Image 1 (cartoon, rainbow, N blue to C red):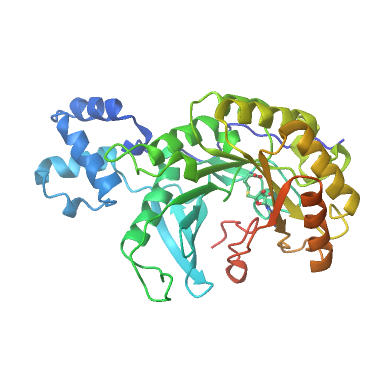
Image 2 (image 1 turned 120 degrees about the horizontal axis):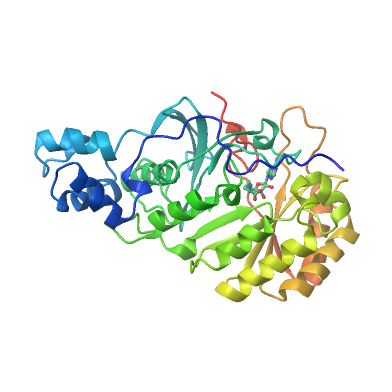
Length: 373
Ligand code: SAH
C-alpha cells in the first residue's frame, strides 16, 4: 500500500490579507466600525464588490476619497492579478492564470454555452490527493485558497460575462450572465473545507451580501473524503455533489485515487447516500475513462450495480475522456469502447453521458490545470 499523500489544511505559502469576501455582512459592519467609519460603509463596499463587480476605488464615488483609500486598503486589497487569459473553442472557452499576493499561481476556466455560462474554479494551489492521471495532482499541495480568493475568481468571471467580453450564441460578443460554478479546477475542495463552504455562501448569497448565484447551480467535486461529504450534507446548502469515482472496485481505485486507501468505495458511496438523503439532490459521479485501465465492460456493469445499490436512480455518471497529461503513459479509450461503456451503464439502470471536453488546445480541460506560467 502506498503512503498516503494526505495534506489537510497545511498551507505552506502565506494566506492573503483580510478581504470583505471572507466576512459575513455583520463581520463587515464590525470591521468598518473598527476602522472608525460608519457601519453603512460596509454595505457600500459590498455593493461595489458583489453587485458592481468592481475593485477599483476610483469607481466608488459614493464614499469620500479619504475614507475610500483606507477602506479599500483594509477590506478590499487586491487578491488576484491576471497574468494572462487565453481562449479557444471560438472564444467560448477562456482560461485565466492568476497570481496571488504571494506569487502563488492558480487557474480558472470560463465556458460559455448557448443557454448558460459555467466557471470552473480552483480551491487550492496544487493538490495533495496525488491522483496519478491529473496534472494538478503531480506537484503536491502548495497552499489553500482563502474564501475571498475563491470568490474573486467568480467575481472576475461574472464581470467578463456582464461586460459582454465573450461571444454569445451567434458568435458575436454579447452580454450574458455567469450562471454555474463548478469546483473542478485545481485542488480538492473538501480538503479546504471551511474556506470552500464560506466561499459557497458568499457566491450564493443575494446581492449586496454575495454574488447571487443559485446554490443549485454550484457543484462541489470531491475525490471522496467521506466525513467531509457528510459534514457538507449537514450545512443546509443545496449545492450539487460530484464524486470522482473513476472505478467501482477498491483494487484499482487505490491506485487511481490514492485517498481510497483511507475511504474505500463503499464508504464514499454511503456518504454520498447520506448527502442525497439530506439534500434531496441527485449525485453526480465523475468517471475519467482511461484506455485498458477502467474501461472494461465488467467495470461498467459493476459500476451500475454498485451505484444502484447505494443511490438507486438518483445518480448520474459523467464519463470524461481522459486528457493525457504530459509524461503520462495513459490515454483516452477508443470511441467504440467509450460508447459500449456508456451503453452498459445505462443498460444497468444508471443514467450515463459523456462530458463535453472544452479547452483541450489551451490545457484548460479536465485535469489539465497546473498553474504554470
Ligand atoms: N479534487 C476534485 C476536483 C478535481 S478536477 C475531484 O477530484 O473531484 C475535476 C475532475 O477532473 C475530477 O473528476 C478529476 O478526477 C478529473 N480529472 C483529473 N485529471 C483528469 C484528466 N487528466 N482527464 C480527465 N479528467 C481528469
